[in-house]
Length: 401
Image (cartoon, rainbow, N blue to C red; front, top):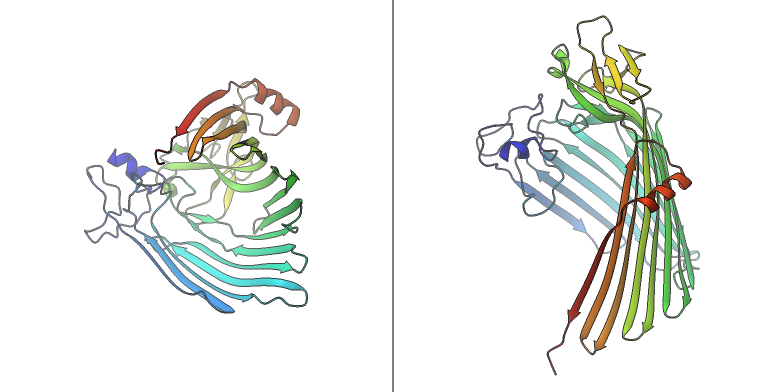
């Protein structure tokens, strides 16, 4: 169990280029004989939160051996993160606005080997106009850095930076219908792009009914999506392994729907449903030219030969053609996944302070390897997927007079 914990994505102690920096007190390297792990966490914040000008300075550290997943969820350690923000707020209504907020900040992060794994700067503005509409704008730039997680336990690789832009607007929340829309876009330094669009509306068709609908669409490209790791003694630069990546295009579509209905003062009904579909299409499989670089070598174009079986969809790669490296194969990583989650809750206060809850939850999901989204096909398949139903009754009784 301890060896598995050290190799988990939280730690990746097996990384071949990890430096041994332990001072004898804290765990920093892979040890198959270890029976415990030792680490520490640190968080500090210094801030000014009153007045027109506000600011904050933060730092957050997690040493490589810090492990608390038995208490709470912790996705990663081995970082020293630092952040600073400066903001100006206008709280007194002006000629065109009721309030406004403008901030600028930046952050950076290093692992305990001294590799910079994050460097960002960003700006944010939120303005509430006199008609109670709100406009929000956000920009951030993530610079080229190193990534000690991209190879899933392999050497540190180069990560490509990108610019991200987001614009959102929401209407007067006092109205019977409140509209909002949010649009986001990123442009990578390597030419990859992403786009997201999330409109929404909240409606009160009657005094006792509230309906909220929020669809979401996302499309994104990634030039270095991990696929698999293959042992190869000829890959000396990567300590005897080849780390295979693909150029992936993902699409995600979802629809969140909520209904709150007050049937009587002592009885309410809440409904929630979320159909969801996502796909990923892989192409142009490649490997990095070397550790700590951003250059990638595409199979069949820059190095080696790659073929795909028309019957099984399996890929076979000879990474160096006529060279000494052995050929290897991997399955088609394309995916199309779908799910539907729904919940209905009836709340009945049958006497003052005493309540009964009747809950029905249904979840169904499915997986295919199409690599794209097709509304008719995926909706039909989703309705045919086997549902998991959970029925729950909960009661409380007030013992006081």
